[in-house]
Amino acid sequence: MLVWLLVSAFLALAVSETTCSGIECNPRIPGSALLQAQVHKGIVSTYIWEISCNDTEVPCDSVEQLSFQQTCVSKSIGCPVACEADQHMCTTPPTCSNCSAVNYCSSQPCPVICGYGEMICGKSTCVKKAAGCPVECSKNENVCHEKPQCEGCIGSNWCSSTVCPVACGQEEVSCPLPDAGNICVPKAMGCPVNCSATEHRCHSQPVYDGGKALNWCSATPCPARCGLAEVSCANLDGSEFCVDMKHGCPVNCSTAEYSCYNPPACDDCAATNWCSPNPCPQICASMDEIPCLYDSRTGDSLCVSRSKGCPVNCSQEEYECHMPPSTQVAEGSNWCSAAPCPSFCTASQISCPTDNGSNLCVPREEGCPVSCPQSHSICHAPPAFDGAVGMNWCSAAPCPVACGSREVQCHGQDGPFCGQKSEGCPVNCTGGEHKCHTPAACSDCVSANWCSSAACPVHCAKDEVLCPSTSKSNATEDFCVPIAAGCPASCLEKEHKCHSPPTCEGCMGSNWCSQLPCPAICSAKELTCAKADGEEFCVNLTQGCPVTCGESEFTCHAMPQCQECVGTNWCSPTPCPH
Image (cartoon, rainbow, N blue to C red; front, side):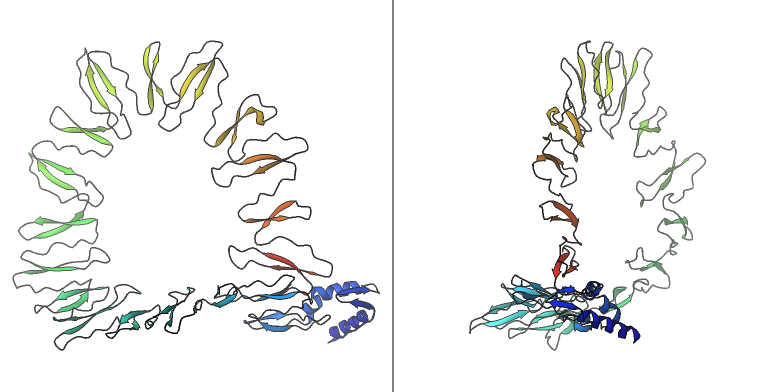
């Protein structure tokens, strides 16, 4: 209470000692201008008369001068503003479910801005999205309406010479009537059917969430309505029933048979039951195992690793052979052989025969070995491409030069030889010649080397661009610069050197000369703004271009209301809305 009395007395003194005209005040005593600035900025109002509003309201300052009382106003209306006689009072409605409307003064006619959940029809009419834009139909036509198919979608209206169909909701399905027209029923129920007295009225539930149920007439009993975790099983009379997929359909075995069970092989698979004259096989606990019969008299079995395969019993004269699985889900195999077991090669190897009838595995690039007489040479040709097989042979003549897939055959004083494609074949140039090199244009291309009496040309890398020597004052030959930098520009002393960065990854930057100051080249997250003298600069999209307001005006800012929107700044003769 004491604080309010002191502030009231100070305000009374300030009012009695100032001469005001409109919103301009001429202070007569020291400190009155400070008090007035505090009043305009809402400091007194903020710390003395600030009030609490509910979630649907917003606190607003009074539009009357020297009045510090705040009031709560509906967010849909927004805080009031006091405009001049020649100004329009404009309103931007709420742009989200919890946003507040914004009122402001404008010298121009107010634009038509629709609020949250609305759409513009024609040039100046806002309607609810769910209602859709209205239509004008003739006297003989019906005005039809279709509801939105999703939240935030738009309803539609049209003219029809026939009766309008019933518009169904998202969880409903449209069903035709016998005498024309339609009705809406829940998707889980499905459209109704009219069956005769001798028919069964059957129903099938939706097969997925949000799907439609199905109803139909059947001369035979309806199938069982099984759930997603159930399987349909048949009785002897043809009727069906449902059981849990983990149990599988039951079987009736004779007294001389074994009732066998195999669990589900996957999460969505059903178990299997069957009758067997032999003892049931071992049920393995893992998909990485397989059952193997080890006693044919009793039918007993055991589980072994899938990659190892079922074991075999070989005699002392036999070889116990094993072939590994060809894929991750395949099974290994084992067998008995009178001859030595063959070797099984990997994908990076090839199988080569031996003198004793077996085989051996060697790397594909080496190729199968050969045995040559002493008078012959053992020649080798490497693979011609990746994944190919090397080759070896015997030759009475000297072996030719065979280069690899990444090599090129070159010719020297001592005969042909292999050089790297990336380096190219070497050249021998005279004392007055330049030894020039052109790099390979692709990964499998060959570089080139040659002799030139003139200076060698400049070859740039993939991320560079070739610039002429005239674009740089101290350059004597063409040169390379990064693509993003772009070739430089030679400007006069009075000119500005301007640069535009690349607009995409891999694009080239550009440089030019301008008699005017260089424009601001902003990024995708920035906005181009201009100063009073025409100079441009960049600001963040959320900040918006700044404004310069008078001493008696308030500098107001509105944050962007959507991801692609831009922040807004403006000058207001009244306090800024919250």
